[in-house]
Length: 136
Image (cartoon, rainbow, N blue to C red; front, side, top):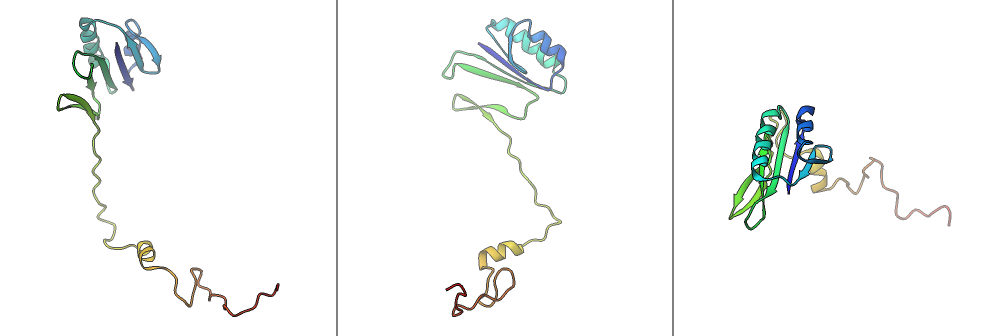
């Protein structure tokens, strides 16, 4: 079983793949092809992909029973103790130098409290506890 997944690839490549594989969803091709056809088909995908990305999954003898190939993809297959895993790139964000360092006003309010006994969060004085309810 061979699966090829295309993202943002030209229509000509998609048409070429439909000669060999079934398109079961947009950009997802599945079929049974031998190793020679698979290698030539993958070479054609890499040549014709242009700015698009491609992922190939196929059967392979071994513990996992499958293998991966990727073209112009951020997720890369890596070998981890004999198992092939897909590594997602970590996005390392750099802090914005324009922002001031230290505690924000909101964080200070959350940490140290926002109300005092003389005022509420809206700035009004709290109602007197000894005042009688006019309805009773």
